[in-house]
Length: 145
Image (cartoon, rainbow, N blue to C red; front, side, top):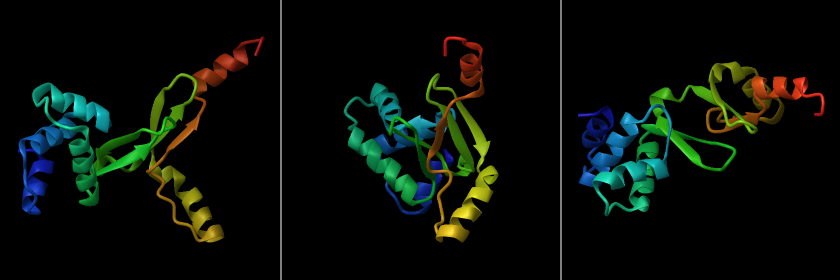
């Protein structure tokens, strides 16, 4: 039995066949997963599952502190296990490459926002969008740029 299934049962939540497949899809994902990709994986085994069931289950898991999500530049929320949430994403808007950094590297920004504005940011909730080193180097090497 997976950790998510066990935690749901321990907290008194029902485990429907759809929920079981959703939890398995999340746990078997390689790090990050969208609701749409979870739905596609579950629908392959349980065609009648509705995407709204996937969203409700993800919301329940998030409310229980078991998963968290990050918003990327395209507006799609990407989910991952909460235990893996101590990282930030840097996404290149040109080539789409993604790199993870430890969220602790952003602590100076967090301190600045709190001290100056009294604002406590959720630094793992969003992705940092920019240009990766390879695309920057390609721009620098292109004399027509």
